[in-house]
Amino acid sequence: MLRVLVISLLFMSVFLLPVSASRIVEVCPNPYGSDDAEYVIVNATAFCVLDDGEGEVPINSTGIVVVAKNITAYELTFGKKADIQFSKRFALSNEGETIRLLEGGKVVDKFTYKPKEGMIFFRTSKGWDFRYQDWTSFSPVDVLTRIKVIVSPASYCFRGSTIWLASYTFTDLRTVKGNITLFLDASPVGGIPVEELEISKRYKTYFLSSTSYKNFHYKFATDGKKVVITTENWKWSKRGFIVEFESERAARLLKNVLLHDVRCSSQPGKAGGLKADYSMGTGKIREFESRVEVFVLPDCNPVFDFISKARQRLYIEVPYMDFTWFDDSMPLLDAILKAARNGTEVKIILDSEHNKERNERTLEFLKRIAIAEGLNIDGRLSRMPLHGKLVISDDDALITSANFNRYGLRLNREVGIILYGKDASEWLAGQFMSDWEKENPGYLIPAIVILSIAVVVAYKAMAKR
Image 1 (cartoon, rainbow, N blue to C red):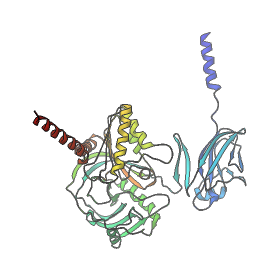
Image 2 (cartoon, rainbow, N blue to C red):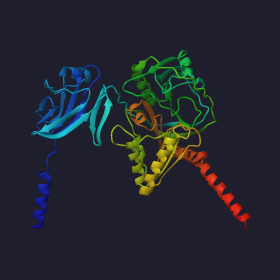
Image 3 (cartoon, rainbow, N blue to C red):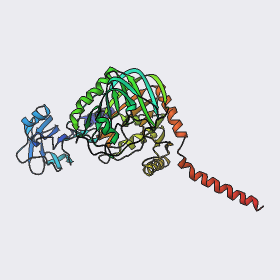
Image 4 (cartoon, rainbow, N blue to C red):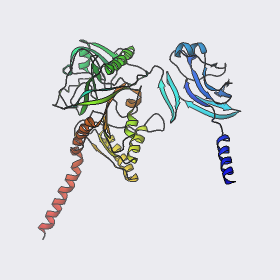
């Protein structure tokens, strides 16, 4: 009898559960060009109605349904067919609004947006995200090759016959030799350096600007076979990282990115001052056989997953961190805490030259969380000027041009490389620990003062005896 009852309960739990309601899954309220191409995509599980408070669009079919303002304009713009056309009173406001989905007169889903031109909102398993209409979708390239890793400050020069070089800024011709074509950001912070403007008169230069990307911040070069990916703006005076290797597949990926991005050519922005920093060091160089993965942002962003997967060690060396995002989420902070909560030892080095006070607050914030939760998180400021972006997660290492904020990890054009395997990660971990142990002297001053006072007090106490 009990067995029959259990089976009956299981039967009821399976067949009497409520069916999932229809959902809004994608919205493009303000496309580039004509508003006639705007659309909403719905995953309909029953007959439903799309509503914007002024008009309604009945959806009398199930599955993925594309609802467009003008079916012809949508197909011309996106190369796909729509299923339903907007009713006359229904329209997506360019200023932002809330759209709703109703079943049987009840609201089963709604989405509130405030768009910029060309922005497409889409639902993920974690909530809503966005992309721009003209963003690309270049897939990462995974290759096994021999790599050379250089830690700067260094004296390094990339040589080739015909070189395509991308950088946020470019001021030092000693760092590259060959027939150069330059791809540079049109409006870097502080203006275009005077040296760069002079160089652009001698070499073919594309200044890049787009409403879809905040900055063209990537830093790489290729001659069609050899590839260099770096964290630096093609000068090697600060702590940074350079990876050089040969791969026609990786070279093809990066050249294709530039062939696309050249569409964003524009006039150079305002001029800045002289950079006037040409110092170089001897650097540290090591070669490895390694599997590497080259990725381009924002097309692919493995950074958060790379951080959160750590189980033994997580070392992060970056100029600064900003945990704010485009909504209430904080994926960078969440990734670090996920690793720490899984028992990972977390060490973070931030720059001491720029953003010092903000970096100190960031590290203190992380340490407070660590104390409250009993986590193994520690952080320090760098001993020397830091511009590199390095993450070591267990036995793998990630090097990228992207700063650790929402622009670098979401809105900028960036590049990065993952080095898989112990050889490279152990060597880079050794470099990280060398930087860690050479803590910024500024942290030692209070300790020295306290020690000096203690010595004086002890001396006077002994003198009274």
